[in-house]
Image (cartoon, rainbow, N blue to C red):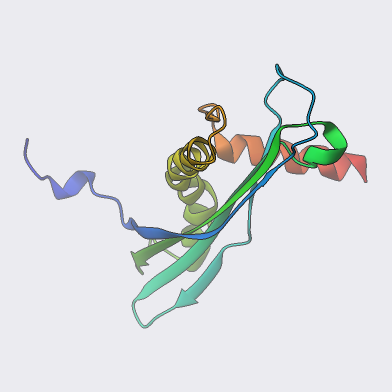
Length: 152
């Protein structure tokens, strides 16, 4: 297949780091079959404007079985990733558009890494591996934000 520049995005993913993994077992748990309880969240994008480019970071977090003691869950797991992104500034790639790309595309790019990290961390903790569902994470976060603003 040809490497055709027409199909390349101006928005580039430069990798990620694992900022935090936290696993806490609840030895007092009495449940054996339970429904997956999880939450996904994203931090505010951070953008640095260079002479002719933008660099940005975005955090994506997952919490599985929150409040394990209180909810009688077998464990609680928290994973936090930080993604690194860049773009060349242009007439089309403005700072505002770059921020929109971070909030939508950045989340979509990071989510498979977050899912894999949750599965690997739970597997390595010698519990039944947790597999987060595939989803439109940007839409999930938008709906979550809409719901929380209605609750206030």
